[in-house]
Length: 138
Length: 328
Picture 1 (cartoon, rainbow over the protein chains, first blue to last red):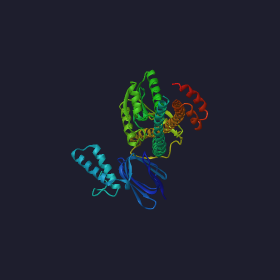
Picture 2 (cartoon, chains in turn cyan, orange; picture 1 turned 180 degrees about the horizontal axis):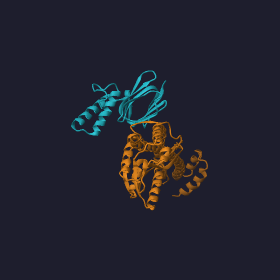
Picture 3 (cartoon, rainbow over the protein chains, first blue to last red; picture 1 turned 120 degrees about the horizontal axis):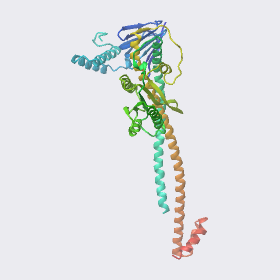
């Protein structure tokens, strides 16, 4: 049994296909997994490494930076201003962003730097691991 | 004298030909960009459809929000118009159509004793309204022919912030909607507050009254989701308007440049006719001068030689003139 999953950004549809599981992270609610037949669900998302398990068992990694998830019956749509498929992420850039965000946080604790750090974490995690940083540190 | 005129005409033809080359190139560029712009409009549809769907689901679930974006103001004092035009001209009536519509609205608002404010997008609108002394809140420019979502977000955030702060009580979008490559129309669409009708109608689409859907689970609560969702919704609406405007701009420019190219062709045709006549005149005069010169040098002998060269209808005439001139 599978469900239709769509990752949609304002500029284009990033991904559309059949999948058996979707794991993402809601605002203030932690990670949540959807299987086919999940009850209708509407959530606001935070920066996260979203994992979509495709029908053939492979896992598609997507860095989602905020947005919404709409689950109804056999359909999961992730709407996001900014979302990136794992393979398309520039790891070097994300690493630099992570370092500069960490520096900024070390100096002073401001919200902008924290969200920049979470974005960098989501990117790194989606593109092949956090490189030493424990998962879900944000 | 006649030769001088011919030279002037030749110069004019050359300059019209150069202009024609430019307008032709602009026409082709615009034509290829329409296709790209149309694809971008189509690519943005899924997101705006689904975000509309989510807003509807939330509204159906009774997601109550204190957000002024949804509630609206009891008393509307200041209406802001977001006017979307191009950065460049040479696109026929595209800019003036939008400017006229916006100016009409502003004048009507002033007559009704209300305040107005303008948010101009595109260099043309900014110049037009600034020159006429209208109050402009902010101006954006430099991306009219290929807007990105980041720009829509910047505009959306600014508009929402000003609305929430009470600077605007209502916001309307004035832009050119792209229907097809052959037809576009200037439209005025309410943007904020998002009443139920606005949300259901989306961007120029009829609402499909599916009504309340199944019982949803929410995380976090519906009110919080709605609060984060509404600004996104405004941004998506602005983005759709920007994309429509960009596609329309290219369509208008293509049409304008096509008629410019056609006009140039017509002008070249007429000018070359006049030039050919002038050239023929000068040749005739020249021949007459040669004939009369030869006549003057060697009396009657020259006339016979000229006849041998077969000057046709000119011969008898030149005979007359040459005899007249021979006395000189």
